[in-house]
Amino acid sequence: EAQVTQNPRYLITVTGKKLTVTCSQNMNHEYMSWYRQDPGLGLRQIYYSMNVEVTDKGDVPEGYKVSRKEKRNFPLILESPSPNQTSLYFCASSFRRHNEQFFGPGTRLTVL
Amino acid sequence: TQLLEQSPQFLSIQEGENLTVYCNSSSVFSSLQWYRQEPGEGPVLLVTVVTGGEVKKLKRLTFQFGDARKDSSLHITAAQPGDTGLYLCAGTGGGGNKLTFGTGTQLKVEL
Image (cartoon, chains in turn orange, red):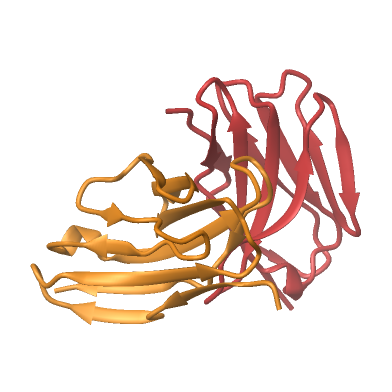
């Protein structure tokens, strides 16, 4: 089944404790991205990757890191999480940047 | 950064009513996508409109792209509880060469 998977689905952590949210897709998509979703603000792009080893900042990159060592994986790293990073995070993939986005199920992160 | 404003932000209606959701911007977009997101899930694409003035129908949902490609609307006829969800528009191009999501419209259809 074609899908985007994210782990964990739910995470409660404390300020400053490094964490990684994994994202994997099995559709051989070149383009992958991370979004955060907050009430009233829609989906805002954090980082995106056009292909392996090619990543760039989205609209709200501060406090986040990403890497794209393999085509299928695109982990999101929070080196020192803060409470303002409490949000619902989505990973998405597509063949090209402007094609249909396939979203993962989301990761709800709470930073205390 | 291009902005896509959706209205209304919230909409609660009874089953059988009609409704229209709007997606507006000051930027021109080369294409516009509409997604629906259900609780606990990621957004799922409903339709993509590309040509100014284009109208697409998906059962009881009608999507229209504005003539100037700066706005779009989603009209639902005879809404059903299964239409409940968050509707998001997303524009591509607009001078920024990226996909920009709108602020979303939360729709609740009650029996």
